[in-house]
Length: 396
Ligand code: COA
Image (tube, rainbow, N blue to C red; front, top):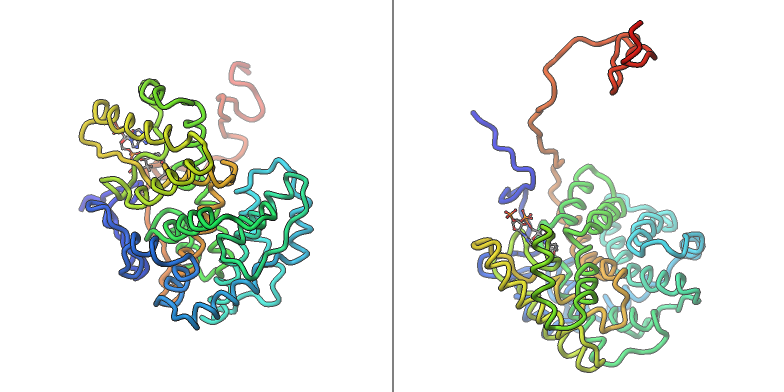
C-alpha cells in the first residue's frame, strides 16, 4: 500500500472540535454554532470568551461574574514586571509576549494540577493578562511607566487605556472589541494545533499557550498584518497599488494578507474589519483604508491574470493593518493583538484536548540513507572529504 505524504496536512482531518467551524467554500465562520457576523455585531469579547470556555453565551449575572473574575486577574505580578524591565528595549513585542507567557507560570501560587477547575482558572488568568503584558511592554519600551489596569473597563477599553492613560472614544473601543471577537477562534489553525499537540503530551496550559504564541509569530500566520502595513506605507497612494502588486509578483513574492488555506472566497472576517477600517480612518483622517481598498482591488485583478483558478482573496490580516494602525497601535505589535484575541480560543481548545486526550503523534516517511555500517571516528570523512584530521588534498 502506498503511503500518502502530506507535508502541510492540507485536507487532513486530525481531530474534532465543538468550538468553531470554518466553512472555506462558502466563507462562513461560526463559534459553537453562532455566526461570526452576529457575534461581531451583538456580543463583546468577554461574552465570546465565556462562550468558548464555558459552552454558552453568559446571562447578565454570569457576565458580571466573568468580568469581575477577568478584571481581578489583569495585574502583572511584580516579579514578572521586574523580568520585563530586564528585557532589551528593542526586543520585538511578540518575543516579549512569548517570554512573558512562559514566565507568568513562575509567579502563580500553584501550577495547574490537571483538574478542570485549575485549568479553567489558568485560562482566565492568561486571557486577562495578555493585554496587560502587551500594553506594559508598549510603555516600557517607550521609557514610560506602565499604567495599572482599570477593573471598570472592558478588555478592549482597558487595553487602549493602559497604552495611553486615556479612556478611548466609544468607536475605538467598539473597533478593538470587534477585532478581538473576530480573532478569538479559528478551528485547527497552526497555533491552535500547536497548543493542542503540546497539551496532548500532558504538559500544562501555560506550556501549551506558550507554544501557540511561538507558532503565531511567523509571517504565514499571525505575522502577516505588520507586513501588510509595510506594503501600505510603501504604496503611499491608492493609484500606485497596481504597479506595486505587479512588481511584487514579478519578483515571485506573496501579497501579504491575501490567500488562505481554508477560505476559497473572501475571508468572512475581512468584511467586518474593512468596515471598521473605513470608519476609523475617516475619523482619524488617515489614508490607510483608501490604500488598502485599492490594494485589494489591484491584487484581485493581478492575481486573476497571474494565477488563474488559484482563488486567492483577502484574509483576516488584510484589514487588520489599517484598523489597528488607526487605533494608534504600532505595526510591530499587531501580532500581539492577534494573540490577545486568540488566547480565548487557544485556552478553550486546550481544555477540549484535556477533556478527551490522546497523544498527537503523526508519522513521517523516512527518505534518508539505507542502513549502513558504523564508522569509527578515525575512519570518518568530514564535509570537505578530510579524514582523521588531515585535509582532503594532503596525499599522505
Ligand atoms: N500572494 C501571491 N500568491 C499567493 C498568495 C499570495 N498572498 N497566496 C497564495 N499564493 C499562490 C502561491 O504562490 C501558489 O502559487 P503557485 O501554485 O503558482 O506556486 C498558490 O497560490 C498556492 O499557495 P500556497 O502558499 O501553497 O497555499 P497555502 O494553502 O499554503 O497558502 C497561505 C495559504 C496563507 C500560507 C498563503 O496564501 C500566503 O502565504 N498568504 C500570504 C500570508 C498571509 O496573509 N498569511 C495570513 C494567513 S491568515
